[in-house]
Amino acid sequence: MKKIIVLLLLATIVKVEAQTSTFAVSDSLFAKGRYKMALKVLDEGESSFLSNYKKAIIYESIDNFKKASFYLEKAITFKDDEKANLKLAKNYRALGQSAKAIPIYEKLIAKDTLNLVLKYQLGKMYVINRKPKKAISTFSYLVEQDVNNANYTYYLGLAYALNGQRDPMINSFIATYKKDSTHLKAIKRLAKSFHKLQDKDSTQLFVDKGLALNKNDIELNKLKINRLYKDKNYLEAVPLLKNLDTIDKKETYSKVMLGRVFYNLDSLDQAKKVFTKLSFIDREDYTALTYLGDIYFKEKNYNKAMMNYMMATTRGKKARDAEYYGLARVFYELEKPKMAIKFFKKAYEENISNYRALYQLATMSDDYYKDKKIAYRLYNEYTEKFWRKDEGMNNFVRNRINEIKKDYFMRGETLK
Image: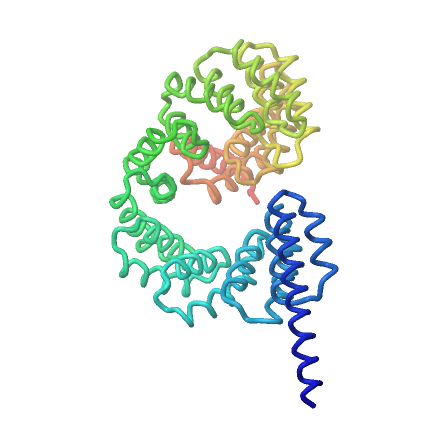
């Protein structure tokens, strides 16, 4: 019996020494960058916590997070090790599988409730995985523990946003800004939040603060440009648009806006160049052709205007009422009222919210047809749907309805 025990002990010692030798060899090879040879040595040995853990480290070092996760999962079956669990959670996050990391962090925090680093990482995962109530609870606790940490209040703001709590969200972002006036993410959130609230002054305040930190930020530049365009400060928008075009070459926003700015500045040749180039860059963006139609219309080159509007209607897949409206204007200028009526009608059918198209359809029908019943019906449709849109149009429509009614009454005819 004693001999058997001694033999078993000797076998265990030999086995441990063999494993130790295997690990030493693989570690040496890995240290020299021979990771394939290191993996081969580990594969030849017996599967254990340490062999799987070492394989995971090797795969993690070459950013193969999928295999690293696989071997960490295997390692944990041998021993529920804290370090291995933490590595597994990090690899899940690297794979974009943060939902799988959440229970690991929750388990680790249950064992160490004072670990603020783990709580912070867990809170961020709650935000990523749209668990606002858990995120709010986590970051509220973290803010209490460290009132000066700007990131805690920032993520608390994101959690409130997910939970649909606008005022607490804005207050959290403001608190973040007060703690760190260079926190660009919070500044951008504030700019966008105040923009949604249509608070022009606050929006511009934070847009300017953000651009002072990063003049090439695309979102902030767009907010600034849109405001300048709305306020008709076209010249001020030009250098911003040219700069944005060099930063964001793939997007067509800067080209479209630059063309529109030149158009509004009556720099028609420059606008034409921009929209002609844009029509070739983005074959699906038919609005460039619409703008070219508008330019040629402005230049009284009605044939070219018609050609561009026509091409836009065939290329466009969304509502093409602007293009049909443009064609109608061309035919009106060419003194072809029947064709103008046809395209005003198509514009309105394409977009039944286009009150200008309905108004033009009604007035042209009134002028063209002897039978005023068509115009009368269209005028009434206008008043029913758009009586608040334009005071001048509304007054004209009401007067014509009354005049038509009076005329038909005097003739003893009824209107339907």
